[in-house]
Image (cartoon, rainbow, N blue to C red; front, side, top):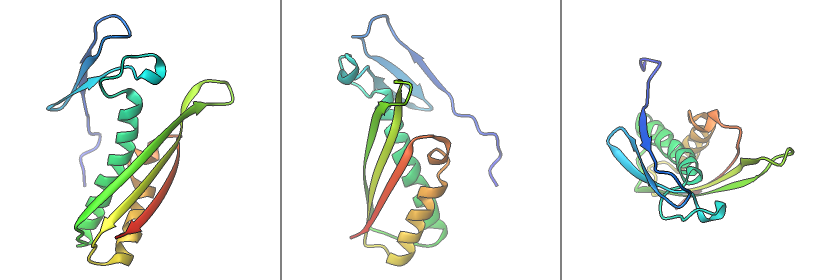
Length: 142
């Protein structure tokens, strides 16, 4: 059993102006952040939308890997592509509306179990279960 609550901390500092990038630090990793061109920023770094998409994607991957390990399922690799749709809600506010994930599981030791665990991971990932974004999943065995 994990000792809850668990804390994850980050530190970020930025200079003034939309055209400047900034660094965000979490644990031992620094990430270059910027406002994306889609929001009239310069790009050149990850945007909050990129990080949100990556959080959902990597939540699925991490959860699947834990389930696979605990079930003694092996696979050659897991290739995941994802897409985040930012749109306006009924009040004309931008929201993270939809998330699409396609996972290809290459050479699993048991294809049926791999699909079952992928579905389970998509339904039970901590971050995936913490958002209002509509999530859509497709799983393929290769």
